[in-house]
Length: 183
Ligand SMILES: NC(=O)c1ccc[n+]([C@@H]2O[C@H](COP(=O)([O-])OP(=O)(O)OC[C@H]3O[C@@H](n4cnc5c(N)ncnc54)[C@H](O)[C@@H]3O)[C@@H](O)[C@H]2O)c1
Image 1: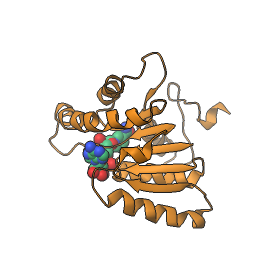
Image 2 (image 1 turned 180 degrees about the vertical axis):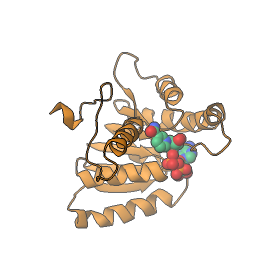
Image 3 (image 1 turned 90 degrees about the horizontal axis):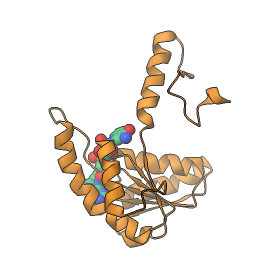
């Protein structure tokens, strides 16, 4: 499986590293607009792979051509919200980034599944669907929003068992296919 992560910042680099650590991808491309950043981060992660015992190859790039025929594209490029910034301000900034990035990525990987992480998530997801021109009927654009779920679970656990190390918490409406409570 070939995965492209667009945006080599906090979220993108972490995503690439976790994918590598799980050893589920043959190739991971970390793409960023800034020259040198994705290349340096990817090389560090790839060099660490033998220590983690994984065989995923991680390559940093600034070129969408390298990402051609990706099976999955994870869109993390975008500014995070800073103090005083409204969701509308963030939308204005990140829509331009989405516009410049996702069309290029989709052009060379027309069959990819796209997972959008950039905020504001709902609007970014809809923009990705429009800008790629991917069919609305196919489940081709997904929201990467499990952080809210994770935060809610952690808060629940901390409320119920403040002195214990976090293990797991779950409540109605928060279950997901990977929730251990379903086992
Ligand atoms: N959905 C969620 O649960 C969730 C969680 C955390 C963060 N986020 C969002 O993810 C986004 C990224 O957050 P972050 O902390 O990694 O930010 P960051 O600033 O660390 O990284 C963003 C990266 O995007 C790159 N970038 C900017 N324009 C680009 C372009 N046109 N093409 C390619 N790369 C480009 C930047 O160079 C930077 O490296 C933000 O919008 C943030 O709000 C979402």
